[in-house]
Image 1: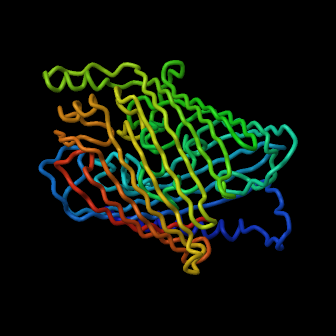
Image 2: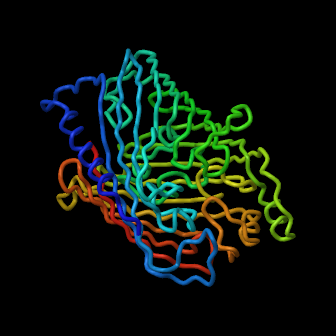
Image 3: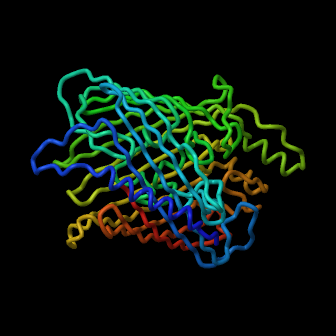
Length: 443
């Protein structure tokens, strides 16, 4: 198990505490309108410890989940600064420090169990500029709504009918595939296939961020947003493909809002198209089975579509579901190896047991891959996440439950359990039980 650097932890915690003192908002009297923000500073720190006991494995490969007892730890600390230089404009920058390793170095499970684990572990800690963006909102007049402050948004009033343009280095998930109950692995479900649609191979470098531009048109009952992003030069790479006319990803999302029995709901339809270097699974299978070397991956298309739904059932209980499909003929560019996915989950606030700031979540997800993808893995392919050497295919079935408890103001502790059947789609391995604990501070 990697040993967390004391200096890294001390710096992260002390910086967060200092920012909390400096950035505390003035108290607002009940019923009074919150003032608009012109600038804000936020911080977050997340420490995730995960372990699994030994499980059955008939064989293992270079990209398998380790089948012996394992325990690993990841830590991230972020500082966010956002300011409004003029009406409707926001400039944001996010510095991120990170260290640690996910279980098996983020390998072996397509629905990977730690959404805060990067695909490149680091023993001593590293610091990057995760986000740096400019956002301009143009209001069309009429009815307004309150926009709450968060780590990337200033508090204030906005026209409901508005057009927002964002450009810079961001995470695609900052804007697309949002879900009230399952989108943030630092406070909600941890699993990759629950925080986002697993079949959405969103463009990102190996830390999860990428330059791009997005247009978002918002109306009261619907919204439409489209974005274009760069792609990494190679799978799981930090370097970017400089040929932006050849290497790119386009995302388009339609969102509808409705009310069912006086409770709000939303449905989102997301489509993506990626043009990037990668191998065709048929070529990979033929090369491995016939002993022929693979030529460098050509530019190829990967595309898919998915449905994302959320519905408040009561003031304390909500449900969500995702259904996604990818064409499954070409390697994933940046996220994970999931061609088909379906998930369903529930989130319940603790008001029923007098812990209104606590949350309990329960969700299940079933992931699958195409026939061509199965043949490549069975022939011995090693991909971004997977590669057991052989494959006796079965869907990857995951159940996750968590309890998040508010310890004190700004500090949460979460206990998490995940059951993974057929890790890496392999019926010759598992099932695996993964136990986790997450400490999260946010100011």
